[in-house]
Amino acid sequence: MDFNRPEVLAELTVAFARYEDALVNNRVEVLDELFWDSAQTVRYGVNENLYGIDAIRDFRNARPAIGLARTLQRTVLSTFGDDFGTAMTEFRREGGDKLGRQSQTWCRIDGRWRDHILHDLEIGDLLASRGMSGAVAEKQASQDAREEASEPPALGQGGIVDRQV
Image (cartoon, rainbow, N blue to C red):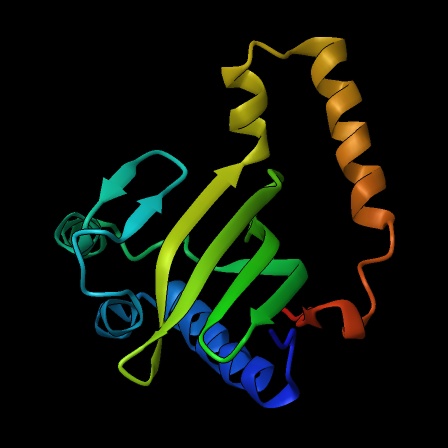
C-alpha cells in the first residue's frame, strides 16, 4: 500500500480545505456534499453525538452561523492507498482560549472524497468532564502547551497544512 502519494495527498488537501472553508463560512450545502450520504456517517461534536447523515444535516441546518471562525494549527493529513485518508488538526475559536482537536476519516466514494467520521473536542471541556480543575488542569494545560511547541512531523511523514482560516 502506498502512503502519502503526492497526487492523492494533494486531492485530500483540497477536500480538507473545502471542508474548513465551508465550516467557518457556514456553507451547509458544501458541508453536506463533503459528508458521506449514509446512515453509517458519524459526527462527534463538541456538545453532540450524531449518527447518520440525516442527524448531521439537521444539526447543520439548525446551528447558528456565528462564532465559527477558528485558527488551525498542527494539521496533519495522511493518505493510505488511493482512496483512504485522515486529517488531524488542533484549533482555537476566534476570541476563545480553549484548544480544540478534530479528527476526520476520509474515503473516496464514487470518485469523490467524503468525510465518513468526524470528531471535535475542546480540551477545556474534556478536562472539566474528567473532574480536573485547579492544579491538575493547569498541569494538563502545561503539557498541552509543551506539545503545541514541539515540532510536528516532517512533510514526508504526513501532509502538513498549517494555515489560518
